[in-house]
Image (tube, rainbow, N blue to C red; front, side):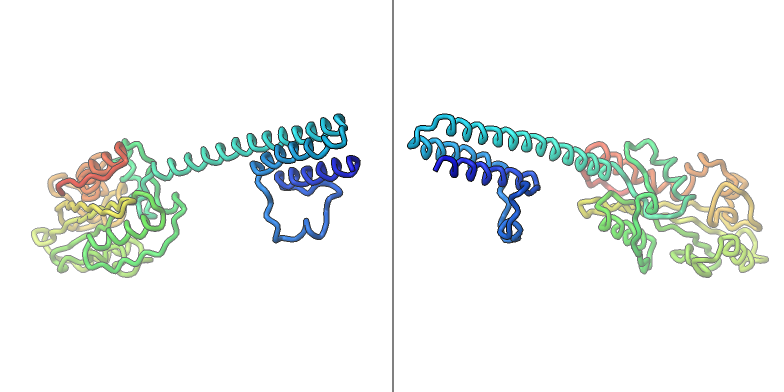
Length: 317
């Protein structure tokens, strides 16, 4: 009896221990072992079984009074127990490492602001203004965001909110978006909310600017008044949205000038500075520009969120 019982129990436990490590014990494969219906026991349950089997073996073999067989069986079970405990320690270390990686990824995602644009000119201006926040400022491309945004709003506010909320819902991050444009009074405030799509999205701004100049050919400066409008929308991960609007007044120049700006900057003239916004130094332009003003108007709200990780409603400026 003892020659049969001890190897049988040892083989059973050894097979169970191997299963806990995701392996099949050598020489123990059988049709039953290959069946998917059997649930693999946990390492914890195998430790408990090892104690139970040790007691059962002692009780069973006590009747044949073979101390050596009992001791060998108990030692075998203790070795299996030690292996399983080692496995559990390794598993805990792996779980801790995975949790650290997950926490680091979450922290990284939480400490970023995505600006819903692919315009590098805008991103340069945005980083210069928001660069002192303890957050990484990313464009949609840099954040790996590729979503379709349908700008079907009829106001700058509506379009900015649409963009910010769409990207926030896709990423779970704090998202900023702007909708900005040029309003020319003589042209009934065209191109307005359609500034980016004026004459077609793929039409270069060099052509767009020239078309506006052609439409104003012969129009005196006194009635060439215009303004840049910018609305910044901030979509917070809790679903709340804040907006800020800012403008800069000027007029349409007689001809394009300047290399420092983008978009309609070369034809937007500031009488008080005697130049277009494309001729201003970047720091001066950021101080004066519609986008710079709107970003600074919402910056304090962003700073509170970045420092405290919480949204606080404030009076709109």
